[in-house]
Image (tube, rainbow, N blue to C red; front, side, top):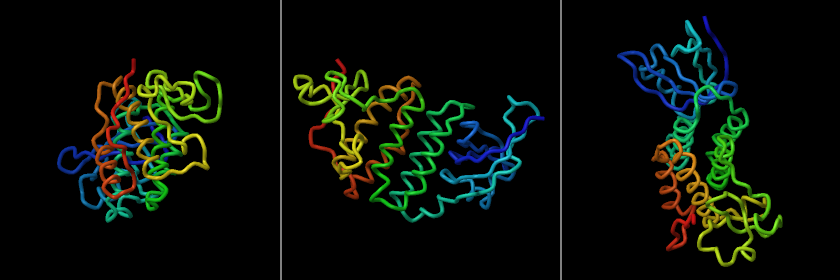
Length: 257
């Protein structure tokens, strides 16, 4: 008999038969995992297993490689119900769960990413804070999966200040004065990603989502042969409609060459 106990964030729940469901979770010590939940198709059980909720889990199987089942999946922090009437927060919660469920390999622990995910999920009630934090979280997701950007110094001059753009090819930051002739091929780097003192206003957050979105689409999900999950686009659209972020007119994707 194989068994483990862990904390996990629910990522998705799919009906399996008449009364059971398959629960996908992101656990702190075992990474992404899944298992059957007996009675998981009932309304009462579904309500506590919604994406974004943190659960106390006990997983059991005859063999470690079997699908297994969750002998325990009890709520520790229920976030989905808390944000049920907040469309912006709910779209962010759904986006986080979709990105993790589609991007994470199964069975690889990412404790730093897990902690960052809970931090983000816990501030979704404050729309003045979470959009910028979401951009930072996406940078962390890219880093955790081997697609991290180097925003520490200029790739051309070595300077650590005045960083304004990112190369779409290398993922390294540059200064505008060192890369003036290539600026139309680069992605703008919002100041709040390199300095806590910089503004994280709507335009800066829009630049941040454009930056992380480029590497999510072209690198991470491109290598997985998957599209970026649709809930992310829905979240960004809702933020833009609510005036929480903006994109400059005519902002096209850069040329990699």
